[in-house]
Length: 111
Image 1 (cartoon, helix red, strand yellow):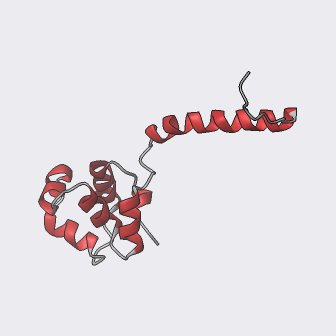
Image 2 (cartoon, rainbow, N blue to C red):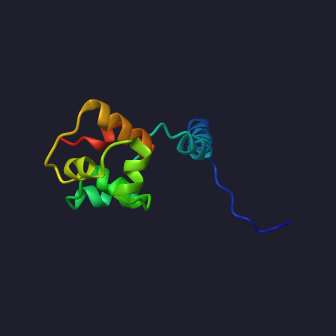
Image 3 (cartoon, one colour):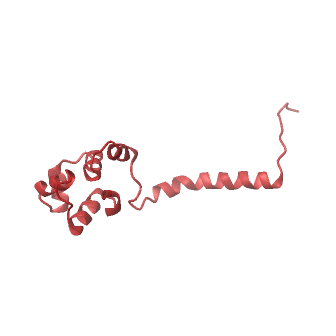
């Protein structure tokens, strides 16, 4: 016989523990099913520090303005103006940028 400690749980406590375990097991699956609305930690920090979301995403992905321009078909100069807040960017341009960065327009527009 081993000298292991035992504990006693009520049925309610046991059920809650099993339920919590099931939730934790499902968590990696939920994280893998990103719909583009999850903001990477590094991007969130850059945005909090005042960087534009588009620039933060672009830097996070290691893209130059030219790279993003090639992916979107939008002139690099116009992308730069949007990043710096000099222009708002049309809905069409923002949709192209979001698609190229693998995110949604909502994550790129902060009001």
